[in-house]
Length: 341
Image 1 (cartoon, rainbow, N blue to C red):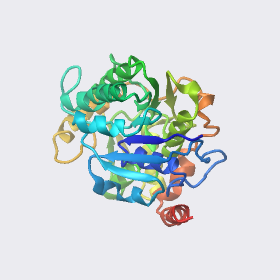
Image 2 (spheres, rainbow, N blue to C red):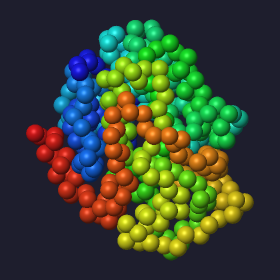
Image 3 (cartoon, helix red, strand yellow):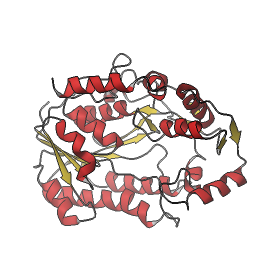
Image 4 (cartoon, one colour):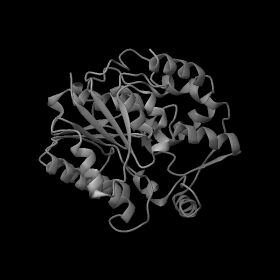
């Protein structure tokens, strides 16, 4: 299917880089077909793919890909946002992948969550309306709910409501935690166990259904070519449910550094999170993260068949060699062959 232009807001991020590569018809370093049906040829063939990012230096790797442009974009600037959307033409597609995990505490959520998860979708909707662009694909999160237990989930829920009420041709995706060779999830657990003798773990029995980053990218691409997805919100998850403790233990074993896991009681877990969220740099854990984990991060049914994900890739198939340090070079060879084919 031919479509003219696609704009990916957050195109240099974890999911964005994989999505841009799929749109360009290139398998990324972590897209080696691991199970039947996991990676297919893209069903659309855009003439122009614009990867919008706040820092173009972080997107230089995308310039190797065919038909890809990198646009340095301050999404807080309405004029620049409108110009980027307007450059697509009325048959263009806008994809919003912007999301944050941490922000200052407030009710119902702090300014950072409001700006990223609610205000940006609202301004994107306005930009689409003013330029005549109809198609909007929006990344939300599994469990998003305006009345949810955490600022993250409440702001994601309010962002969804903005998109649902837009009267545009929208599709919303609500993934569980996303994994892949370049993630900050399983790799973080593996790194922690390389340097620490024991892992003090909050919410050890919280349940997740992790989904492979390439399956998420494929779902977005397939939806672009499937009119039946318009006006629907889709949960995305992998084939298996794990407790947080099981995920931590898997990361340690696969990386060759298994450590004992120490369950933290709720009071001590919140104290630990309160300390961590005030430390310099990106927090490893916050109290809001704990609040999010009060809800199981799992799907209530199967993947929607119209998304075309016939057999989602399992965590073990995608990550065991990577965490063990065996998968990087073979994946880089795959990327080189794909880019220069």
